[in-house]
Image (tube, rainbow, N blue to C red):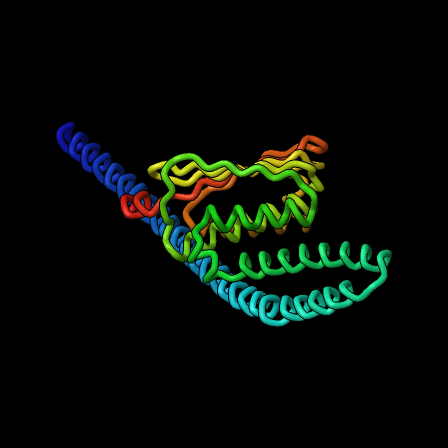
Length: 267
């Protein structure tokens, strides 16, 4: 074999090896890209399914709350009102000592009627949408303060704007659940809620001085399902949630909800 032929064979062999290597690399890259796309598509399908499932649950929950709200307002509040009228009549025709007891009972019953009406309002999505986010939150905090004897403080900064019907109602339900969890599990004596209306997002901070908890441990346990549900709801709003807490040092929950303007810019 001549030297020229040997060089030609070497060059041809090198070229074949290089082409084979390039083909192999391209094949592996294409397969990895397909696997990645399949993984992304699967995650998107799971996310859409979970989102639709969560949306369905929320719709059922809203309908249940609406029915319960109407039951409270139309039946229970009316029954309490009739009882109050009967007690008032009994008070007018009673002995001094009995009258004093009835007066106290009337005052307590009046507070109970007010609480029932407040609860029925904040459970009713139509009322929340009519009054707006901040007024609905103030009503809910007023009820918590009166019923639970917790010192509640509410502050609002920035120019208030609407998030849109569905987002605003879901945001209120998330806040309402966070307050209820703080009261039930944290047992605080003070609760501070601040809303900051920023141009691109709504920032909500809920702080209490309750018992607190280990966040990682709570999320790992079944008792952390409430936190997971909150995060799933916030995810539906394209928002984020950050929970800071320590045992015996209270809890702070920070919610970031994009404004309608931010949503339009992202699409």
